[in-house]
Image (tube, rainbow, N blue to C red):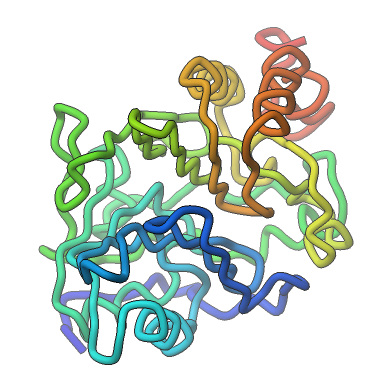
Length: 286
């Protein structure tokens, strides 16, 4: 393993899973969503061409599972051209060092996420006091120390382009983290949201386990700027997406997506913003 790369001191597996774990869904010929425990990663690229990019890298200690899924879809020995991170929280960068070691490919993230991915800055502590259920209560156990990818991490180009994904552009959607991005393809209005909004109430263990579909704002226990989070959801709704692959929960498409996203924007303060928690600023929101 590259000795310049390392996980944070608190890096560990989290004993949480869902009924969707291990399930992959092809939404479009070149869009494949795979659920790793409680989080989704996305393979973007057509298996017939063999060129593809991995968006996010799942939970800690999942590298072998991810490699198996990649090779089942694209063929033995296949590897992505790059990894694109929507953000650097532990459940989106789990296993990334093992994957870089195996594939020796570049990783891209927004420049504001780079400090969290080069060992310089840790994320704010997850808020176990935030309104929510068992997952919220467990969240202080989640890793938040920065990982260090050394010179393997690069900032996404400032013009919105994404290397190796010429049809997509990245959109800055902060709130859940400072450099959070979502990926959008204009031609068919495909959206990869990361955690800007999700389709499961991520704070409640029962709902996470059962993957009960319900549009929601970003996971509360790690969202520190609710004003920015609301503006990000408004920005994504204005794109009028037809397909949304979210960081948590099952994908949403068509009229169901349009209706639910409109509801989330109109009722964001009621649906998404917790009634209490250390990152809630009542004056700005309610």
